[in-house]
Length: 66
Image 1 (tube, rainbow, N blue to C red):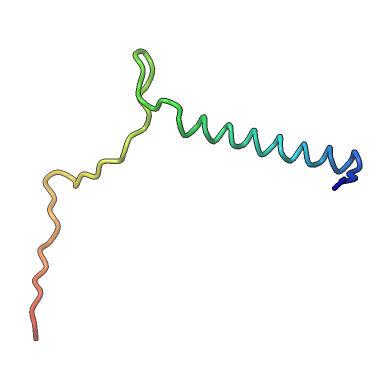
Image 2 (image 1 turned 90 degrees about the vertical axis):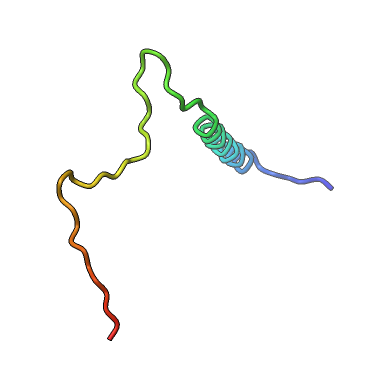
């Protein structure tokens, strides 16, 4: 089976495949890059720790059935 594809369609298909390949490569670099801190460089952002203000407590709420 012979497929007759003009050069414009083939060029467009190659551009689409090249952009898809570049995107896949960038996604793999982001996914598998080392995220641990290195000496002499700032540590990456971590999870946010939540702390209540010191000395202030939330008012107690009593639930009553009735």
